[in-house]
Length: 325
Ligand code: SAM
Image 1 (cartoon, rainbow, N blue to C red):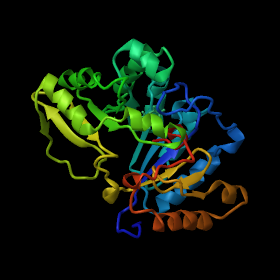
Image 2: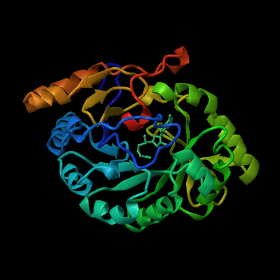
Image 3: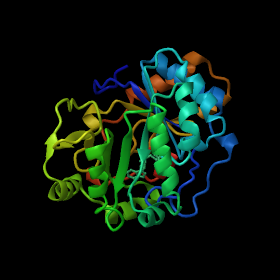
Image 4: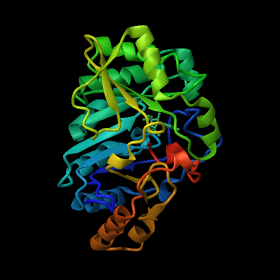
């Protein structure tokens, strides 16, 4: 289905929970309360939404959170989503902490790929950024994901001034030996952490310059067709690629092909705008498949042209952990 700006909307990012087993300083505000599970979409409700979205042309689903792997019964839910007709691609964005145990069962259930968030290779900084001492578990999770065939592995790094802006070099160096995509993401302002994001913001241009000063020129990859959020580069002779995701300084809204559904069942049309469509209440009031489908279609028709950060309009209602990234 196309939106009113002619963009083909075929990618759904579905949050399975707002809870997380890390406490990243830029993502989860202090004192945030996770929703009780009764307020979250139940498995049959998740499946109803995926089926309705697939019938409108969604062919790519990414599971996110909170941390999607902490949802009870996640492997069985993945199996059921993977069986929905019309889906070509089922992936997950995760912090990797539980992948040592879950990578293999998730792959067998039909998950194709994972993006793993990792902001530093330094244990101490990892602890400062995530408020948890779990670096080794994440690293084991990345290796388990690769062994389970959940590749190509993509590592997502949010760059935060005063925390990890120097660490981009070590992370970029990984691509010399490993066939991974390492992607650096500009910090975005959401909710109560908007001010933190403004102070910690590092533009992609600075990240690129820092990597090039240490490791040599980043060569633009062929095949940057604008379909992905990242612009990809490669260090000379590297096995993997380096991606820059410049959502703030070079937004890709004109090419945005995404819908989001939050764990509490709201259809969100733009990551960085608060407008949402309530799907949970109609689902719990017994709406039909056609009615659910029409609610989603109507949302797509009203998808905004882009975010409004340039006008200093920030989303206020939710933290990133409650949207899913
Ligand atoms: N827990 C999972 C994970 O760690 O990947 C999935 C949810 S998390 C909200 C998804 C992604 O959003 C992570 O890569 C995280 O680093 C990123 N993220 C969180 N807050 C952000 C912010 N303010 N700006 C940019 N990216 C952010």
